[in-house]
Amino acid sequence: GNSANVLVLDQKLVPWFPLHVSELDAIATRTLDAGAELKSDHPGFHDATYRQRRQMIASLANQHKHGSLPPLLEYTEEEIATWRTVYDNLEPMTNKFACRQYLDIVAEMRSEGVVTRDRIPQQRDVSAFLEEKTGFTVRPVAGLLSSRDFLNGLAFRTFFSTQYMRHHSLPLYTPEPDLCHEIIGHAPMFADPDFADFSQAIGLASLGASEEDVKRLATCYWFSVEFGLCREEGEVKAYGAGLLSSFGELEYACSPTRPAGGKLEAPAIEAWDPWVAAHRSYPITEYQPTYFCAESLQEAKERMRDFCEQGLKRPFHARFHELSQSVWVDRNV
Ligand code: HBI
Ligand code: FE
Image (cartoon, rainbow, N blue to C red; front, side):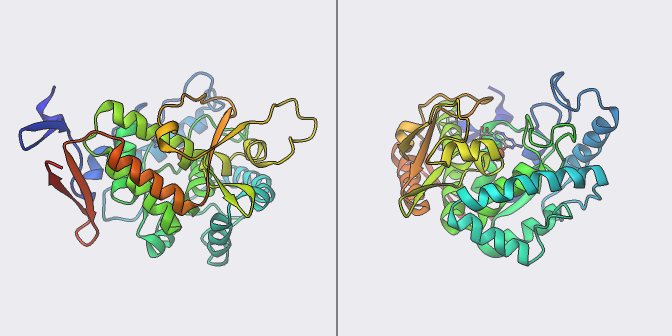
């Protein structure tokens, strides 16, 4: 391959990966779809104003550099109205079905004014809140990254996050991650120490990993960070962002009885096991047929760590050095 895309470690070639947090700048602009190209079935495809807005926000994200604050965005009344609709629909559902850690953190974010119903949260405020809790930060990205690039950010306790709003015509639907998914779904969980370490473990394992191992890690990510459940006093609660930001699927996954009028069959709920989850296929446009449920976030993290250490093949071990914000590589492990 291209020598710029590989790193030489004791004469072994591995895919290039960042060694310092500032090198995430190189990753952040490698979006798969130029950041704001909408597919023809996107709800905003025919809306020229929306497309222009997406381009503007994408270009701000692409200009962002490590060490500066995420750009402040002045959201329009239309965007704020969409935010309120999403917020009002999700809040009663998360109160019922989100895990305790999520609810405690959201309560704190609300009381500190980081998350509000009547104003769209600014990414820099969300990032500052998380950084004080666990050292996780959020940085702007224009759109979807490859699994490898996206997961590599987590190694540096960095979450790539979009800042645009879904299209107002379908406030409870988005075909791609938008600010509602990032802020309501993902952000609060990164303030939990076990979840933060869980996420970073996936990230560290993805550095220089083979394509097959990146795929396994992305699949584990899907069944945990996006759709994970955990047990709480005998009940099943959600910690995955795909659930926490989808009021329909949240009830579908967590309700002990099927939603009223339910034509849907109950999903299968299996014990969280990365060895099993890593090889499971999944639909991306429908509700999941299977969810994995951990006994606790701590247990989820420990199993994930075991899998990263024993279930993957890599000729070295990577660890994060917090003070220097860099990754140290132990060779020939
Ligand atoms: N890129 N910007 C962005 N946001 C995501 O949530 C995201 C991504 N790329 C891949 C991805 N998520 C996951 O589907 C896994 O492949 C890691
Ligand atoms: Fe997500």
